[in-house]
Every structure is written in structure tokens, then in C-alpha cells.
Amino acid sequence: MALGIKVLKAPTVQIMVEITGILQKQAWDRNIMPPVEKVRPGLWSIPVPIPANPLRYVLVYVLELDSGIAIVDAGWNTDVAWHALNAGLAEAGGSISDVRAVLVTHMHPDHYGLAGRVREASGAWVGLHPADAAILEGRYVNTDELLRQMWDLLVDCGVPENRLSDLNLASMMIRSQVSVAQPDVLFSDEELVDLPGWDLKAIWTPGHSPGHTCFYSERHKFLLSGDHVLPHITPNITVHTQSHPNPVGEYLASLKKIEDLAAEEIMPAHEYRFSGLRDRIKELADHHNERLAEVFRLLADRPGATAWDLTILLTWSRPWTEIPPFMQRAALGETLAHLVELEEEGRVRREGSHPFRFFTINP
Image: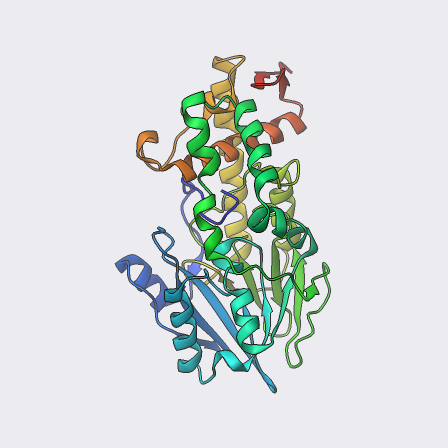
């Protein structure tokens, strides 16, 4: 699910965060678009729709500058999203031509897709972390090698032959929803972004993507969290041919990296604004620990199982047969990611290839 569709199973623990985006939460519960909002002096939130996706929208944040505006994330490259972004900017008192910078939290289509189109219309610079910038060409332009590598990975995961083609090609449908823009600026971890009037610090938080980046304002005490921390949904953490070797381990480390920030409000890219960062981080870590335990229990009862064998037995938010191919592939990548973390912890080993088979290790 490295392409932006989120995880299929929500945490089982009780939500402990306090909702601050009241109108956003009301809209989420009613399955409608939230309003454009001025959430802080000089800071706006604009919902940009995502087509045929249960997430419905990405929240684009607009920061007022003396010389124009900057936006954090941009939306999918569709005409509907483009018109919504333009309308939202107009409601906030600006326009596309006023955009001076596009800060992209990560390279998934719902965040990066419109960045190139915004730059063409405004001359804005586009910023991205170098770990995500390095995989743009292979992800969205020259994809033959990506498809070959993904086919091999699916085989190693034990995907049945009659499902290989569907799962391998599942992500190709969204290539048209990205206007590829090589970044003009590469964000460095823990460095301030060049936005006069704002003290946004880029914080590298890999896991959901190799280069996922949050933006923190110490002066205003808010965190633009992208997909790293959402109020209810857990982001998809998956092994992908372009991912780092142990994305679950990276994600858990990235959560700890931000848990002590003095952020009074978290502004995520989906759902609604909230407070209670430390509590939410604990919930997310607990969710992954529960998932690791579930994978381990299943494997203990089925030594030699493949990642595919375990995936179809795990608990998801709906019956396996009702999950579309792209999200099945995302689920498989998640299962493999948790198996890799268990390997790193010395609790699981793998043998062979075509497919890999996994075994628990007795303490």
C-alpha cells in the first residue's frame, strides 16, 4: 500500500485523543467533505477530494507568506481535485498563481500528484525528502523494472499463480493521477524550511514511505503530520520493492522520534485535527505490537507458512474476498513487513525462496 491507500484494520484500543477539528470530524462522520477552514492565524486547511477512495480527501494546508502562500501537500492529479484546490485557495483569499512553495510530506499520489501542475501554474518550488525523490522515476515514469521486481516479490510471498497478474498491475491505474515533478528542494532532517515568517522544521519520519516528512512549528506548537500520525486510521506500513528493508521497525522508531514534541495540535493529511500526540503514538505502537503477536501466533501454528498464507488468515476490516486487488497487495506487504520485524527481533526465520517460508524460533 505504498501508494497511499491506508491500512485495512484500525487499532483495537480505545481512542484517547481529543478532537480539535470539530467540523472536520462532523463531516467525516456524515461522509461528506469538510469545509475550508482558517485553523490558525495565517494557516488554512483545504480538503481536496480523492477519487473512489474511502479516505475521501487529503487535507492541504495553506500558509500565508508576505510574498504569497505555501502549501503542504497538493492532492491527486485529477480535474476534480484541481478545481477543488483552486476553489479552496480562492476561499482562503488566494489563488494558484500565489503559490511560492509546495512542501510534499511524501510521494504517494494523494500528496504529490498535483505538485507538478501547481508548479507549472505558479512557478513555485517543490520540496520532498531525498529518499522519496530517489524513487519517483521508477515509481511513476519508467515502471518496467518496478513491475519485474514486484512480480518476483509476489512470487516469493507465495501469491498463487492465478492472482499474480492482478496484484502486480494493481497500482498502475493511478500513474495518470501524478504529474511528475522532480523536486527543486530536498528536505534535510531537523532543518528549518525556507519559509519566511514560519519556523517549520522538517522531521524525517520514514515508515509509510522511505522519505516521509512531518513539519513542526515550535513557536506555534503544531505538527503537520502527513500520514505518519492520523487520529484514527493507522497508516499502511508495507514491504515494497522500493521500501527500506524493515519499514515497521523504521515506523516505530519514527514514532518515538516525535513523541516528545510540544505539539498542542496535530494537523494530519486525512480525517481531522486532534491533540494528544503521545497518547496517539502509544496507540499506534500498541497496534503494531498486537499485529506482531497475531502474526507470530498464526505462524507458530503453521510452520513453513508463506506471507500470503498468513495474510489471508489475519484479521482485516472486511472479509478477504471483499478486498480489492490493490488493497490485498497492500495487506500482503503489511504482513511481510511484520514478518521482517519479527526476523529482526530474532523471533522468526525464513527459508528458501520462490516462495519464502517462515518459521518461529523457540526462545
